[in-house]
Every structure is written in C-alpha cells, then in structure tokens.
Amino acid sequence: MSRHHSHLASAATVLETLMPGEPLMHHLKKFFSGNKKYGSKDRKMITEICYNFFRVGKALDHLDTETKTLYALFLCTNKKNELLAALRPDLDDKITLPLRKKLGLLELKAEDIFWPAEELSDEINREDFSISLLKQPLLYLRVRPGKEIKVQEKLTEAKITFEEVSTSCLALSPASKITEVVKLNKEAVVQDRSSQLVFDYLKREEIFLSKDVTVWDCCAASGGKSILLFDILHGHLRLTVSDVRENIMHNLRNRFEDAGIKNYDSFVADLTQKNAVTKKQYELIVCDAPCSGSGTWSRTPEQLAFFALTDIDKYAEMQKAIASTALECLQKDGLFFYITCSVFKKENEDVVEFLKSKFDLQVMQAEYIKGYNLEADTMFVAVLKK
Image (cartoon, rainbow, N blue to C red; front, side, top):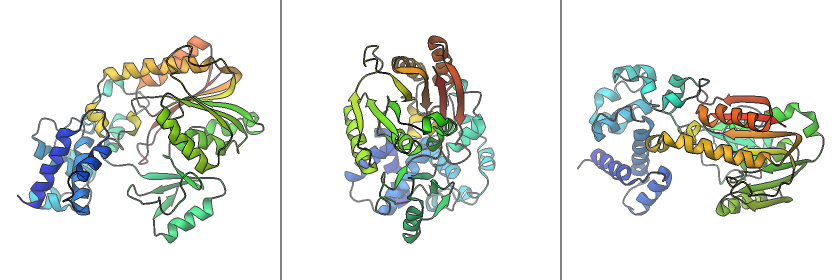
C-alpha cells in the first residue's frame, strides 16, 4: 500500500470509530497514542484529512468515502498538496482557484454544506457562513491590560507572526505554539475575536464603570467571560461564578489563580431547576448559555456531521429554563447578558422574545457578532434590562 493510501485508510479508521459527541481532536490523540508508528508528517496529513472530511457537511455524502475525502481536501486546501498530486493530479492542478470556482467544478453550491438552513437566523448570510466552515478560524489572543507591549515583544522574539486587530486583540495562525511563549491567563487569554466583543455595551454604561458591581456569571464554564469582565471593569466587581459541572469549576479556579482573580464566590448548581439558587440579587448577570455551538463549527466541524435538528429545540428549552432561573436574581435596573455561540433563531431571537415577555424586560441590544467573514466565531449577544 502506498503511503498516500495508507493515510486515507488510517483516516477512514478514525472516522469510522469516532462516536457522536466525542471531540475529533481527542479521538485523534487517542488514535495516535495507540499507533506510535506515525511520524509528525503522517499525523498532520491524517488529521487534515479527517477535519476536512467533516468540513463539507453532507454535501458530498452521495460519493464513496475516498472520493469525498479527496474532494474535501481539494475544497479546504489552497496550496499544492502531496496526496492530491499523487492520487488526483487534476484537482491538485486547480488547488489555488478561488473557493467558489472550486465548488462550481464539483457542481456544488456553498449552501449544500450547511444543511440545517431552515433553522438559521435571517441575520446570517447562509452562503458566506457555509463557506466559512471550509476553513479553520484563526487563533485569537486577548492581551490583558498593561501587557500589550510585553506580549507583542515575546511573540516577535519567538518569531510567531501575528496581526494586531486592536491593541488588545491579536490574530495568529491556528497552528501557533504559544504556551511556552506567553503566560496564558496572566498576560493574555486565548479568546476568539467575537467573544472579546460581547461586553462592549458596558463601555457605554458609565454607571457600571465607576463603582464595584455585583456580578453573577451563571454558566461560567472555565471563566473566560469572567476574566474579560474583570478587565473591562478594572477589577471593580464583586464576582460570583457558577456552573453545573464541578470539573469545569476546577479549571476555572486554576485560570482565576493565573489571572490574579482572588476574591470571588463560586458554587455548583443546575439552573434548569427552579429552586437551584437563593434569590440573592445582582446588578449584572452573565448567561453564556449552553447551546448548539453552531457558530463555532468551523473549529469543530464534526459537530455539524452528528447534529440532529431536534437538538435545537432541546437547547432552546434548556436556555429558557436557565435564563428564567437566573433572571429571578436580577435587581431592578440591572443588566442581563444573554450570550450564545449559535446561529439558530430558536436559540437566540426566540429565547430573547420569550424572556422579554415573561419578565417584562427592556431589550437594550440584540445582535449577532458575525465572525464568519473574519476567520472567527459567530456569536449572539442580547442585553436585557429589568
């Protein structure tokens, strides 16, 4: 068997054994751990094949696995490819064509890639969003206040190329190795470009920037939004964080220690249950709700392949329950940030409309942060006032 067919066969094994819900990255690590024969070049090619296979969604499902794999590699790559050159030189010769022309050669439309189209928000351009799925987004760093010069100097010294999106936002190649260069969480946080913008509304609210604010991050996960809020409010907050998962709260505590956040309260709670928390009142509540993650599928394309339309309704009901429990703790004139990384209307606009009606809230902002044309994630943020 040629090396190229060996790569295809190995990728096929990975694809066949991946279970729904299992991150492809973790599955690949397990596969390579059990197969030490692969060198770094082999691992890179097999990984590329697997990710690209999922990037095309169901658009090429009518083809056999090898043909779909080669077509996916053709669509998702813009540089000459050794495997394509060996097995499909006709495709490799056209590898640098614009993506829309390559789709035309394969008699595909971009819309064929993103199949749950009927659930997509009207605010999202389906063609542009579908095309974004064919390319891995950039790696973004949010540089923490006062660390801007130091971080750029460190990256430059390490010969890591970056683009300065803003003084605090740097864009790097997805393959950039930064863990040994930058002190993560202390000097900079790995945080997508769109995620860095979710609290921009606060920058217009002087009252929240001039005093200590009581804040509850009710779906805190590993704490990225809390660290961002800490920096925006210059540390002037009395912070409470919670999540349903104890293990993720452990990760949060480690990140907070690195970030220099020491004074905060934390607890574990399932907010889908009405009496999950006491009715302590907060001036600002952040609800970064569990969601389909559809706005991040260019990073995790395997999720598109395994996604079921019925999941959207399940997430929407969960989001309504969590937000309703949290809103009971919002004090008068307080702000509620409802955030998802979803592009589905039922998870975003419909949830906001439900909350607005149920709690008689004023919608101060409701918009998508569209990253799909910027090699970034797409997010939704709504600011509700009681």
